[in-house]
Length: 486
Image (cartoon, rainbow, N blue to C red):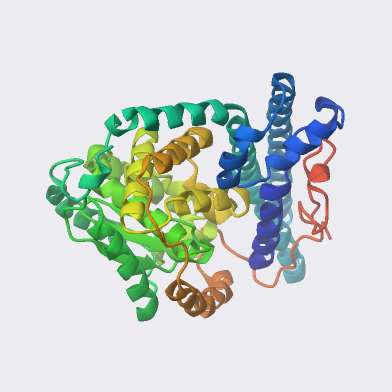
């Protein structure tokens, strides 16, 4: 049942990222040609928008109307699904009360039916919470950022070209890209190794570290790419790569050169430069010692304590002895929703720094530096659902991040034959496919934070039905899905 719900949710969210309404029909201007064109442009990737934005002509009034429409659309859609969640919560309370009041007279079949109803309502409530709290805001924020690119990039592009012509750009922070490997971004990288080792040991003891992905060919491939980037970075410590068997679209760095890449990220990347861009970004966190600056012992302890508290409160049915990671991964919609990014020393300022340095490292290693931007855009637009939402939670505004990245790419000296794709990447993807398929089969049997009733049919009507217009889903009249009371 849970796997069916997840599949339906993923289909829905993939559609949401592409086809979200840009506001209530009443709030939008009349269907002029300009309005239609502007909406179409908001669906284009950042890389393409940066190229065409200087040629686009939209009035300030049109931009303001579209911005207002986005704001109202986001507000309306989020409020709608918050109401859905609230309604599901009331139904759960009522169903649990009825179960308690009738527990002495229920037959086994009636008890199972009651359990299934509560279970379905809990799944639908979780779906509504993720939609309202993460997926829909992420989609709308991304659309708003693209509107800003159309509006503001032409002037900023001219400024960027002027900075390049005058040579001012070379005086930017870390503008000495020809000295990569011979400069020091933050002294004392070696001092972080022990702290990284301690953090890994603690995560493993707490059951918060996913198992490793056991495929030597894939391990060797990713390690080869990572070491190539490391040799062309400012890294002063040995790089240690670990692949994790996790569906999260994520990668993270711990102090001292410990990089962890989750299976979901390898699945999501479309080409080698996208993978290289993410690896380079995480490496930049290490070279700038971001974790050392924020990842203090007290912070680590508080995050572990938070996760332990959640497990202690929710765990039932003898699940407490099972690894906490699995409980979080399969009881909620992903580890990132609980841990956020605090453990990893992430802040808005540090993310922007890692973007800049990561783009430099990927470029210096011979990769197309737009890979990171293209991967970011893909996750935000088409795969920013459950398994990727933690990627966006504490990061800077999309517009600032994408514009800063584009400016850095323009500032870099031109190189010929930058790598975007390789046959080795395609070979890795083929090897990964059966591993991913097998992992998906095992998901329904993984531990959960909630006691699970086996053999339940999913709700007859989910929040989203394939083919249903997103405008209808996000309209004020959309109603919560129903769960049979039989």
